[in-house]
Amino acid sequence: MLLHEFNPSIKAFTVIVCVLILSVFFDPVTPFLTLVMTAAATFIFGRVSFKRWILLFSPFIFMAAIYIWSALVFSKTIEGETLIWTWGIFTLTEESFLRALSLGMRVLSFTSLSLLFILTTKPTDFLLSLMQQCRLPPKLAYGIMAGYRFLPLMKEEFEIIKSAHRIRGVPKARTFHDKAAELKRYTVPLLAGAIRKAERTAMAMESKGFTGDKNRDFYHKISVSWKDWACFAFFIGVILISAYISWLFGFLQFYNGEL
Amino acid sequence: MLEKWKLREVIVLSVLAVVFAVVYLAFLQFGNVLYGMFGLIGYDLIFGIWFIVSIIAAYIIRKPGAAFLSETIAAAIEVMIGNAVGPRLILSGMIQGIGAEAVFAATKWNNYRTWVLIAAGMGSSVTSFIWGYYISGYAALSPGYVTAMFFVRLISGALLAGLLGKWMSESLAKTGALNSFPIGKELKRGKPENGITA
Image 1 (cartoon, rainbow over the protein chains, first blue to last red):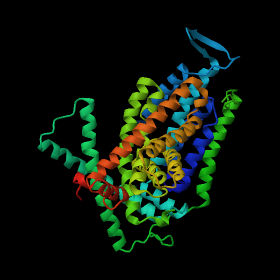
Image 2: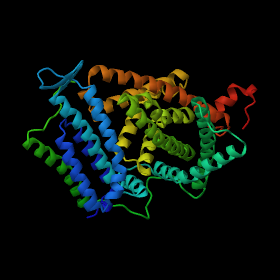
Image 3: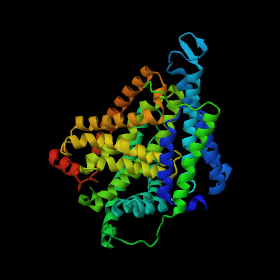
């Protein structure tokens, strides 16, 4: 089964549950193994090219590095931990080092789970599934779809406003104050235009008979089968196996209570 | 909750969410620069901007759920555009929205004065911080640093969400695009001598 066929709502639910479970671990090995396995699943079952994946993933390596750095500098030292380095007021214990590393790995494992979702899910399918499986009111779902459709239109409008400013000789913003004024010059007309367009869209939808009634039928049906729940179980299993391996090597660490 | 909403309001809500989803993504880049410069607390400096749609939507539409739904939809749109933070972001959006919504609920969705808007921005700061504490493992950081982060985020929520949101909504209302919404009517009724025309 390809990840593209995995029911979008259950896929999103799986990712969120995985993230929630991963947040209880404070050792670097569990998130690292989860990262490796989810990435492998994305390549094998999602047929995602490595190039595309790494392009989206790489900024997070930088973020994880800064997180590790922050967590090291502002680490919490608990009495009785093994000291490995002191410099002035800075003290670094082995445990806090592992904790910092774990937080960085956590960022990366979250990213790999998220990429698995976004690289294998079509936005429209996701909304249709939310409507059909999670009882998202059609009013809201079609509202979101209409809004989503506005994105390219707004980009166009943005270009128009930019040209209009240029024609009228608005100078390029250099100082911070100018930049703030520029931001206002763009957002206010963009928003005003968008709101007017939204009102027209709503009118058009209503005149074509859209009532937002929950008892409607769908041309494009999205179903749930046992396979989707098997997929869910698979990813939960990935985390449990990661934690088990981490435990085998004596790394497994939950946060032990010092809140 | 949504039964009392007109379709017009729902679409306007979604469109606001779409615009701010793009703004949020842009600020993520800016946040990353600050993050690179100041570490974790860098995000907290501008964290308030990520609550602004709650304030704007609630201030414009003035119905129960506006703050919560707008933030949630903005997060969903960010995921749809393909932000690598992924579905978890929807949960974050809901949690941020609840913070602001709770403040509006406390006034029974009747009071949209400046201080309420500021308090709503701070409400989102509080809920988002609790969520961040769990999900980003702040428990492993030194308590002094975490406290500093919290206060910076609280101030950011008050200014960048509360005050900036109010100011933006009012600039928008002045264009006349919101004349069919409570905020536009209020503006017309309140200060007709300003020469505001539709």
